Figure 1 (cartoon, rainbow, N blue to C red):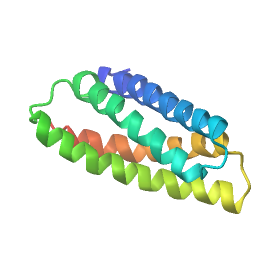
Figure 2 (figure 1 turned 45 degrees about the vertical axis):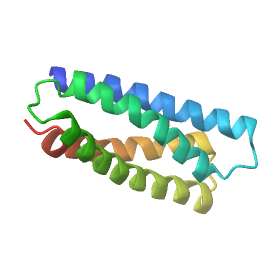
Figure 3 (figure 1 turned 60 degrees about the vertical axis):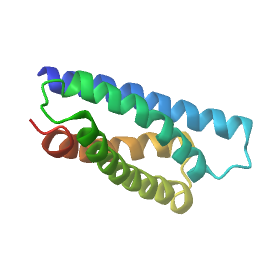
Figure 4 (figure 1 turned 90 degrees about the horizontal axis):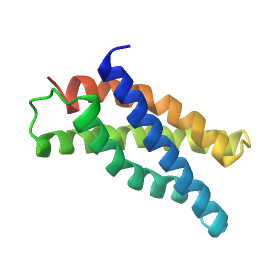
Length: 125
């Protein structure tokens, strides 16, 4: 496995687990909070972890300045989150899936989009 792919998977899995952990904690402690809001909070916290891991591990050979990578990654991550939130809402509201299961599926769908945008734009070599 290529180092870029390896570190992308490790960083992505760590960020996804963080995202899901925050979601589950918020839903447990505050069951009146909309699942979509808990999903958004998990995204915000995982974003910081994800950027650091991708910048210094997944795409460490990049020549793109940190500020430029951060701005591009923010756009990339927000596009991924928009995809995530739509999939999440369809699975929970239309099909009645449990929140964590729907979030897991949404994160898997959004991760492919995020990899492509990260590799070829946000952290372009």
